[in-house]
Length: 62
Image (cartoon, rainbow, N blue to C red; front, side, top):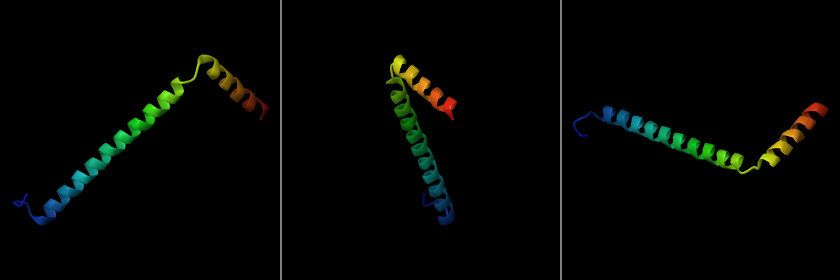
C-alpha cells in the first residue's frame, strides 16, 4: 500500500468504506424483509379474511 501515492490510498479507502456501507445496507434490508415475512405468515387464513373484510368495510364507508 505504501507504493501508492497518498491521494490514491485515500481514494481506495473511500471506495472500501462505500462498499462496506453498501453491504451493510443490503444486510439490513434482508433483515427487514425477513421480519415482515415472518409477521405476514404468522396470521391464520381466518385472521387474514377478517382483516380484509374490515379494510373493505372501512374503504366502502368512506
